[in-house]
Each structure stands twice: as structure tokens, then as C-alpha cells.
Amino acid sequence: MLLPLAGCVLWPSPATPGAPRCGAVRACSPVVDVPTVYTPFLDSMFAIFAEYGIELEPYPVAEELKQRSVTSGSAAKPRKVDLSLQAHRSAKLRHIRAAHIQGGDGLQVLNICLFPHLEFALPTFSADLVTLPGGHLIAIDCQPNDPSAPPDTDSDRLARLYTEHRERLPDGGPVAVETARFFSDNFLWSRLPLSCSTAELQALVLPAFESYLRSYLQSAEEALPAADAATLARVHTRQLEYADYRIEKDPARAMLQRLFGDEYSERLIREALFDLPRVLAAERRGDLSLDSYVSTPAAAPAPV
Image (cartoon, rainbow, N blue to C red; front, side):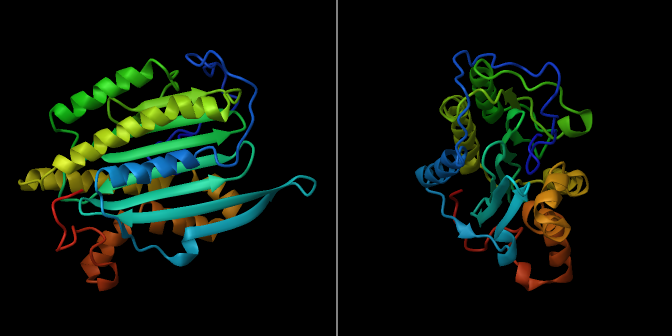
């Protein structure tokens, strides 16, 4: 898909002809689905935040959007589906969010996005980790928010990581032009067959997730506020453009609506997943209830 929820934007059919077989994964065993296949990724993210000394603050999200549980499937085979949302912010990251869907066999999703404050010309870190009946879909990137910026040590470091992990993960196939423009040259996009066990998937993908996240946080640690108005304008435009695009064309919408209903799904997308247009509109109105959603907290120190 790329997953319905985050920086990715394809949701290929599970039956896509010619989808890569296990490729680099030569020793796949029969699948044994585990309800918490992506929980170690979420745990690892918070451990890496602690490793970098990142102080997290709660990010305001309506309480009714943070948890949702439904019963899906047929009467003969009902299936519980749980959605949980965690949201934080830090001195340099405006919005850190993780949406986790657990629906048993064939429905596991973890979507993570780290959106930087608008005064930093940092990328947006995104990870879509998805298990559907047709296989596992993996998408990890540091999406550029200043596309005109020349290559630097950050992009060189990420390119080396991309090469390393690309050798282990089969390519995920073509990406639509209208969405590819948001990704970096080091966009890690892969499909793995459902025959890959949970342990094998984690052994292949968790190192890539962790190395991309560490590279991103190193960039954030070293970042200074952009000094020129042109850079700030490009960053502002890019982040808003991406949020508007996802609000209009989020490929997760149909799945979310089917599982959780229209009203909840629309609020989740607009208020919790891609909230920048709403936040900027509130700032223009002088709505202090949304104060500091966008601007770096006044007392924020230099750390990430």
C-alpha cells in the first residue's frame, strides 16, 4: 500500500502479478502470524529516542481518536481489530506519531511519521510496515522537505544505508509518479511474501528501520534553524503540500472507513495523521488551544 497511513502511497493488490518472491529471503518458512509482529519496531523507536536523549512531550490529540476497537469479519469468523495512536513532540520535531493496527492474521500495520518543526529544513521520517493477506509491504524513507537542497553528508550517509539494505530486501515495484515526487532517492520500498515468518521479517526489516531512524535523528541533532526566507518558504510549502495530498488521496481511507466508520476515519486523517493544514488555520485564527503545535516551544533547548 504503501501503507494506508503514512509516508507511502501505494497500496498494491495482494494478488499483483509478478510480485517478488522472497528474493533475498531464501529460507522462508511457513507463515505463523503473530498479533504483535510490528510491536518490536515501536519499542525500538522509543529506545532509540532515549539513546539520543530526546525529551518527548505529549502532542495534543482528541482522546476519542487515540483508541478504537471493532469486530470485523463474518459471523462465523469474527475478528477483533484494534487501532492505537501515540503522539508526541520534541524540540525539533513538531509531530511524532505512530498508528498501530492489530487485526490478527493478515492485518498488521504500523505507520510512523516524524514531522519536523517548520523552521528546520529537515526531512520527514516515515515508515509504513504492513502485513495483508497478500504479503508484507515495507516502506521506509526520509522524505525531503527542501527538494532543491544539494546533496550533503546526511544524504550521503542515507545513500550508503540504502545500498546496504537494498541488497537484502527485494524491490517493491514501480511507484506512481504523483507520489514518487515526495520520496527521496533512498526510499526503501519492498514486498515480502506471507511465507516469510515474523522472525524472518523482523531480522530483515528491523535493522533497516533502526539505521534509517538513527541517521534521521543524527541529522536532527545537528540541525540549526534555517536562516533564509526562501528555504523556510520551501519547507513550509512542501510540508503543507504533502499533508494536503494525503488528506485528499490517502489510500488508507477506504480501509479505515470499512473498519472504523466514516466519521472516525475522516477525523483521524485530518486531525491526527496529517493535521498541519488544520493547525496552521488555527494559528491564523489565533486559536491558543493549538499554540505550539507548529512553532518550536519557546523554552526548547538545542537537543532534538
